[in-house]
Figure 1 (cartoon, helix red, strand yellow):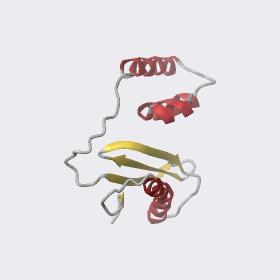
Figure 2 (cartoon, one colour):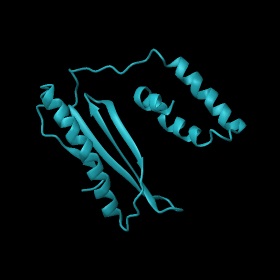
Figure 3 (cartoon, one colour):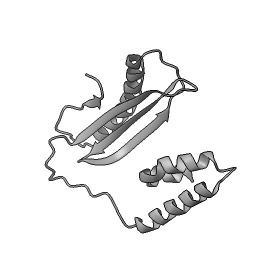
Length: 145
């Protein structure tokens, strides 16, 4: 179920991830959240992302990287995330729970940036193989100078 959510409905992936943590021991709150999520899915099933080549933004392909430094005080792990937008519409994103303890926010940011860069290179190769010209210099934005 979680795989289908990640592939087809990015908007509820965080909710599903949290609900699946409590799959063995659901409380009434979890059941209410599950029902609310199902109602949301039913009411939004005919919505779609529309791409418009005649956009106002100058950038065609935008890549952003971010992290939450030591957001889990029990394990001292950081969380990382990145997203890719094409014609101002989200086409891919990933949120990662870290498994490495970093001793500085700078090292954590570099780790997040390197994780983002791997997927960024994949997208650049895909665009090259399908002969999609971005007509711009590819850039990765992050929350640091």
